[in-house]
Length: 368
Image (cartoon, rainbow, N blue to C red):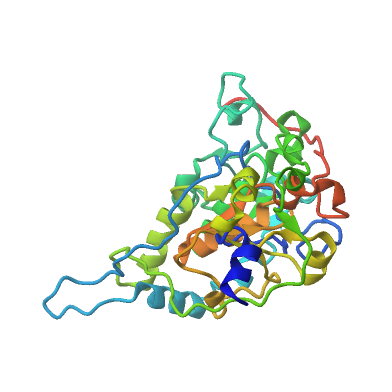
C-alpha cells in the first residue's frame, strides 16, 4: 500500500486496534456471550482518564557508557524472553474476561477480588469503593496492583479485577498476567454488576456520524512492514528485570487510552488498528485509514506491521480487548492506546452483537 493510502486509511497512525475482542467476543460480530467482547473500558468517564503517553519507546537501549561495555538491545532481550516464557499476545488474551453472571454463579469467595476505582466519579463525597463494591474486594490503585496481589493473595486464588467500565481493569489484568498471575477482568466493570454504578450507558452512541469523513467502507488495505523496532531504555540487562520495569512504567504508571473525539477528529495523526475479523470490517465499516488486524494474528513475530515512530490506536467493540492489547504493546515498546468504548461509542445503533446490554443488579456492600 502506498504512503498516501496508509495515511488516508490509517486515520490516526496511532494503531487503533479495532478491538475484535477475541475474549471479548472478538470472534466476529456474533453475540457477546461470556467471552469478553472487550468489555468496555473506563474511557473518558471510567477510571482511566484516557491519556497516557509515551509507549515504552525511549532512546538509549540500555547501553553502557564507554569502556568497551556491550550495548544491550533491550527490545531483543525482552521479546526473546517473552517468546520463551509463553508471554506472546495470543496466550495473554486467552480467557481473560468473565461476565458478571459467571462470577456470581461461580461464587465471589473463589476469587481474590481487586477493585481499582479510586476516584469519586459518582460525586457523592466518598471514594467510589466505599459507596459500593463486591463483597470481599480489596481497594487497590492501578499502580500498586501487581505488588499488592503478590503480597496479599496468599491462597493463590484466581484474581478478579474490576474498574468502572472494564477499560482500565484490562490494563491491570495484562500487567498481572505478564507478571505470572492468573487474573481475569470483570466484563463491563462495576457498571455491569449493578445499575447504581452504571457509567456505560452514557458512553454508547453513534459518534462516527459527527465527524465528516472519519468512517468509511472499503477493502482492508495491505498491512505495512517496518524494518525498525522500538528502542527500550530501562537500563536493565536481565530480561525479567526489563519486563518488570516495563510493566511498572508502561502499564501501571498510566492508563493508555484515547477518547473517540480525540481519534475521529484527527485520525491522520495515528496508526489505527481495527482489531476485528475481516467479516466484521466488511459489515460495519471502519475508521478512515485503519488497518484490519484479525484477533490472535498480532504476535511477537508480526510486530513489524506497527510503526514504532507513531502513536498507535487499537479499537475493538467495547474498548476492553483493545485495552489488553495496548497494554501489551506498551510493554514491548510501542506508543499504543486503546480507544475508549470502541464501536459501542461510534456505531452503536448499527451493531448486531458485542454491545453494552445493561447491568445485572447483583448485591454489593458499602463502606471501607
